[in-house]
Length: 129
Image (cartoon, rainbow, N blue to C red; front, side):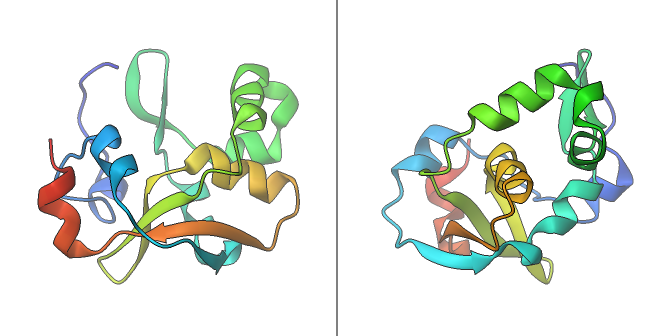
């Protein structure tokens, strides 16, 4: 991915640390069910990247016009919903660490709930890059 300026809208909600997905996936955390609606705010922000630039693609665009973004739609629909979303309570709400494609697929399929793992703040030192 290209290195660019992180948009203010991402800085306002995003984490102030980088994490290693492999370390994140190794955490032994319980599975919980969460209302999908608690996480839909992610769809309105450019968390995805395309064309070699960071943070320039919003999941809502795929939800609204899937035929316009066939490559992204294919990737979303290949997401494995058996894997939970990893979330952390940050800046007053649940924020995804991993699982935006799965969340998008769950929304497309009309799911009301999603499986999540709630990563505690105390785990930051275990997952940091």
